[in-house]
Image 1 (tube, rainbow, N blue to C red):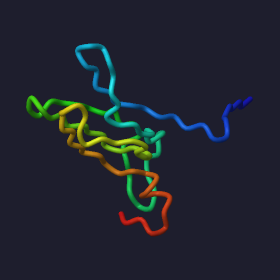
Image 2 (cartoon, rainbow, N blue to C red):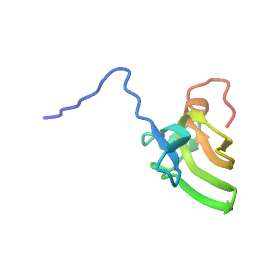
Image 3 (cartoon, rainbow, N blue to C red):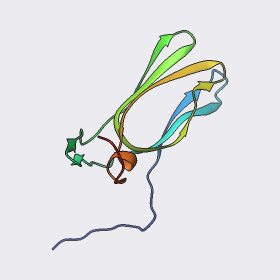
Length: 102
């Protein structure tokens, strides 16, 4: 017997946040993970992709994600901190659009 559960319109978002010494949080990046898509339009992608965040100097960090579905919120600076991104393929652009370039 096969059972499945789904909900129309459900979007799973993940966020990367900066937590200040005071305890307040500021969102750096909101994104939709790749959801296990391993390929489309002749390209292949990792099935899962964990983000990594590292300090590049005292006033800058780098956020890296090999593959994701889409970005819903992205900031290049937060509270005086520069944010650099290394984002791989965004599947919403690469796989959905007939005009997308590989």
